[in-house]
Image (cartoon, rainbow, N blue to C red; front, side, top):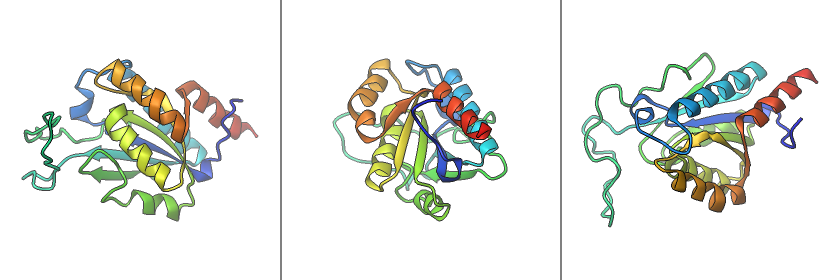
Length: 197
């Protein structure tokens, strides 16, 4: 058993932006294939134990008018209209029966969505968080969850970024201060231990 004790009835796995357009991009330090495989294993284990699985994807409206357009010193990550299907969740993840899908239009998954409502109505107080990109969608969601009082566990090998440096900086500076950092095997072992009790 790991030092992380999980109660599936109060647990949600929140998966950030594992969608067709994003998993086609190169990532580091973990490949998108590794991130998707680990997130899928976590999702299946959570479903099996009665945890709540939330699949988050991002995308603007067809005309792009609901996207953010700040004046900034560096160019935005994406200014062109995405190709059809760019925002579809990868089939390895689902959604499956009982999952909740959240569509967001910015980095974080809380603002302008029903995520907080869905978690609180189910009595969830602990979030397992993973996805791409570590230092954008995952970290923004993590900061928002922290400010809302959720306990968080960040699954390091089910996250990745555009560079290893970006990923490592987020985990070294932010994640350990607002939650706990673990890996896929540790979480799966804890969920398996819970099922054997």
